[in-house]
Image (cartoon, rainbow, N blue to C red; front, side, top):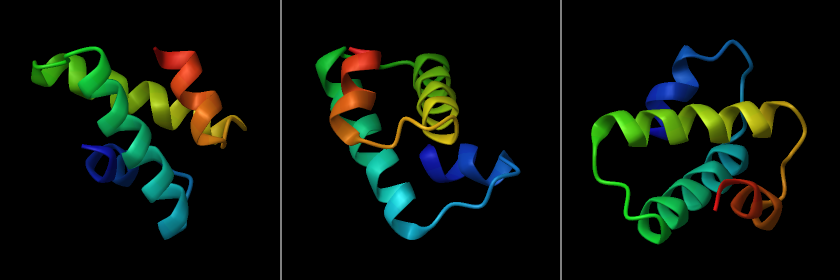
Length: 66
């Protein structure tokens, strides 16, 4: 889901950027028991938004979204 949403973004990301976002996505999906595609899509959008606006630390992203 992160790669799919990332491709719609206009800001290019490095492989490590994608890896951080994917780890956060996986952790939040598990912690919040996110099951529906709509919820997963919204989470991916939120993660990318925060990341692209300067929140690049995995722990900080997780705290914002938990």
